[in-house]
Amino acid sequence: MASYDFGMVGLGTMGRNLLLNIADHGFSAIGFDKDTAKTRLLEESATGGTTVKGVNSMEEMIAELKSPRKIMLLVPAGPIVDSVIKDLLPLLQEGDIIIDGGNSHFTDTLNRIKYVEDKKIHFMGMGVSGGEEGARRGPSIMPGGDVEAWDHVKPILEAVSAKVNNEPCVAYMGKNAAGHYVKMVHNGIEYAIMQMISEVYDFMKRGLELSNDEMHAVFTKWNDGELQSFLIEITAAIFPKKDELTGISLVDIILDKAGSKGTGKWTSQEAMNLPVPLPTIDMAVAMRDISGYKDERAQAAALYKPKTKSFSSNKEKLLLQLHDALYAATLIAYAQGFSMLQKASVERQMDIPMKDVVKIWRGGCIIRSAQLEIFTAAFKKNSSLDNILLDKKIAAIVKKKQAGLRKMVQQFATAKIPAAGLMSALAYLDAYTSERMATNLIQAQRDFFGAHTYQRIDKEGSFHTEW
Image (cartoon, rainbow, N blue to C red; front, side, top):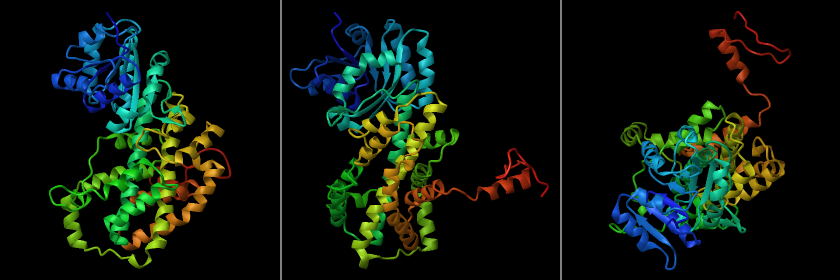
């Protein structure tokens, strides 16, 4: 007899934790995985008094779910998702709901929506942010697609999501593949902020010659102020951690080659297709790529012998400027991501509610920060704001903080410490606030060598010159 409220396919750490979270909030939860060890661990991990069951047969899970069946997939993105959907469809009935909660590319989600719609099955693409702990205790959840399906799953998702001021960090993100699209841009912003924090760390370490204990103190202090965020918080927590094998700081023995699952790259690629400028996210992706060339970097360092300039005699002043530089550049990175969502909302007909996006990112997700409260106010005032840099209150903040960013870009260059993220954020600000750019010369060049034509400032139409 059907008695379970919610089903999960894939009981890895994320799937297990989210299902346990659902059960903790009073819903009966059932999970499927071929691995018997994972289904056993699910049941052993359940809170006493909750209703949780693990099964190794998809047919058994489907049979025990209440109608309309609500089934979430948390399996690796790509062909595995399509394989699971194909296995599920013969077992489902009209009106049942499939939710892909993995990091799927939004174009795959669009294809899956088309694939199931003639079978009268609801399909939702849903971004989930917050990592393993977020899944267990309260993530930020970004569902999009079928509105009727959203109405069915809304009570469950609102219950299990993170809460800020008693408001759930979940909302309907829009039509079609909006859920996965919003999560993709979230991850792009995440790339940018992580890159800039690493640049600030590099300057503290090599330019200011701070110890790990001193950097722990600085980031802890910053997290108690206007820079408060999850990424600043975990950065502070990294420095005291000792390696169990050597007893030295763990961060100092981690190889400087960054991994990537591709979502930052997806953001940059899609931004170029729209098109919308995301230079800080682009540079974050590029710097991870450069980090992979470890052997070549070692050869280049031996060849060029760059000598880092020390600023250790002026630490306090530079730390204040670093703080403002990171604050301003982080705000600009958010601005780039938000502008992409606004453009995509129209171009891809997703109707993304920006005020809700910003609201649900305030808790549970990786890029949650105090700044999001400022952005929430801006989008409440003007939900169609093309770029948050056009908001008067935000502009006042940027004007105040940009001096630190400008000064630190100079100091990074002088010290020969790479700061692609911070520099690109400043370049974006200067370009975006320039009423007239030098692009007229580029247009003249294009017309000179390719007869591509140009427009004039004094009359309408396209023109060509025999140079």
